[in-house]
Amino acid sequence: MDNEEFFEAGFSEACAGETGAGLASYATGLRTHVLLPTLFLAAFLITLRGNGLIALLTVLDPALRAPKYFFLRQLALVEICFSLDIVPRLLVTLRPGQGVSPAGCALQLLLVLSCVTSECFLLTAMAWDHYVAWDHYCRPLYYGAIVSPGLCHRLAATCWLAGVPVSLVFTIWLFHFPFCGPRGICHFFWDIAPLLSLVCVDTKVFKANVFAATVLVIMVPFCLIATFYIGVLATVLWMPSATRSPKALPTCAFYFIVVALFCGTTGFIHLRPKASYSPESKQVVSLSYTLVTPMLNPLIYSLWNNEVKATLGWVCLQRKGTHMP
Image (cartoon, rainbow, N blue to C red; front, top):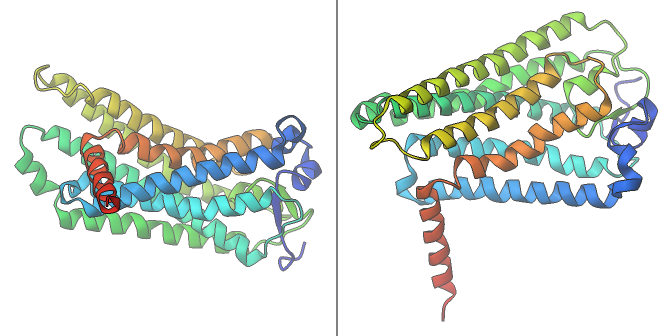
């Protein structure tokens, strides 16, 4: 296939051309063209509202200037960028016959890889911050000296910029391959795995590099995050029960579950990018880290936090006061 032709991603024609499986197989029973866009749009709006609210609150309230809230704001901004890159195009792919130029396809892949890389590193920085905070729970001055504002800004800049070279290398490399066969893929956005199914030359070296990058970008951060949270768990368990926060263990457990969901699903797809997984499994796994995780992060990380809820209540009262006669 000529690389200048238009690509098509979606749940219908591309899936029918591959196995007849995937989300397209549910079209009759679930009324795909009505139900799925509604569900995806609802998840998209919840994600934008939740993450946008976190970003706004951490800017407005001086009480939310601690390092953990700074990293939360960075994570919320990454999730917003991720969702804006994925969901609008996802809603378009539910309409058959909607193609995208190679440039548009490459741009989406570039942003996806960049956001995934930045999010993995940000989650690692957040886990490290939680570990240092709990390790110095009774010595807050030591914590403030270690996790300084300057260090937080350098870590955040590193996390944001780290995704750029990774995404550029693999996007340019992948689009230098010749494409052949059908123009459509059984997927809802342009990722490495579905695009490899269109390549008609040997890609062993490319896949080996994708595997290595996945280990470095996803699995190594996940191991570090697990180590940090094990350290938090040990610290909390060693604390006297009188000083131990009752929310500490459940909160860390939920943090780790969200991290495991994100890293596990992205690793599942990218560790074996051309593996013979069914279209259904690829789509469900991809949905979990492109729609579910960005929607859950504001709930898990922030909206259970008393300081965040207090700030939200204050903002609501201020807004209500401005509309009172």
